[in-house]
Image (cartoon, rainbow, N blue to C red; front, side, top):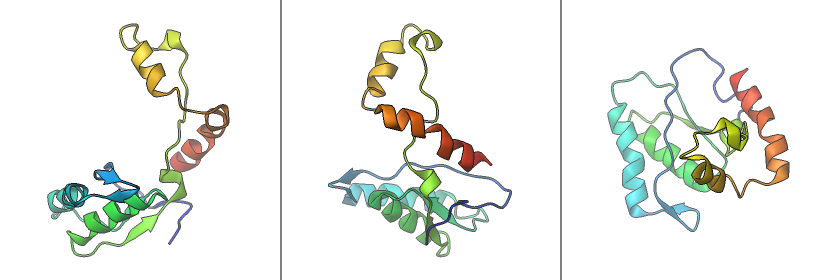
Length: 124
């Protein structure tokens, strides 16, 4: 199920990265990593787990949701990998600027232009 709103009800949001993956799928270690947040959230009244469109994220969400009483997982476009803001070098700490800009070096001009919109929509 794809939801443009990714959970529009007010409440607490918890974020987790997908488990370890290879070839786009979770490894056995990644599956165990995905189960851990579900166990930690066992006593939290979750209503849904939202994930980005990537397969490994969907697998993670299914495993997280299984631990606390079979909470449903929903694919959410707005939870995808976006760069909402691309900083200028002068905005970054001098001792980390090269590292951070190197980490962002694969971001294409199109992604730089498109990234702020899904971030804005996710926060609306």
